Amino acid sequence: MKNDIYAVYNNSEYRLGARDGDWINLCSNDSNDLNSGFTLYNGVVYIKKVRINELNAIYSVKTYADYKGYRCQVIKEIDDKLLLHFMIGDYKICENLGFVMADRGVYNKWVNIKDIERIYEIKKQYPYKEKSILLTVKSLINI
Image (tube, rainbow, N blue to C red; front, side, top):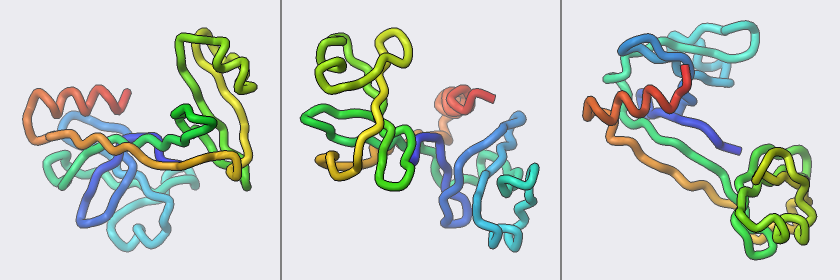
């Protein structure tokens, strides 16, 4: 499930990581990226530090599912189950659907993937080459 900020670099998609000024880390789970200058970080993820202006695109992607007529964000997938995240003002709807309150106004529920009507991604492109937008994108990365 994609729920993060991504970039296109050399025609490949990477998750964005830590930034430092005009530099940003690309993150990959593919060991083949070692051949493209990535290094293994903490034995978990492959990273490569590049200049932000070398990126071809920056965008956020969130995964959603339609469940019993409502749009929910998909947080995690394990085997044939999805963890749905639902934020709505009417808690009665959440209770009627069997969601459990995780935080004030936030409800979660594990569901079988067979009970999902549709799974889809929503992608928001950032025009990052404009300086003001670039600063906004940098702040979205939370680093």
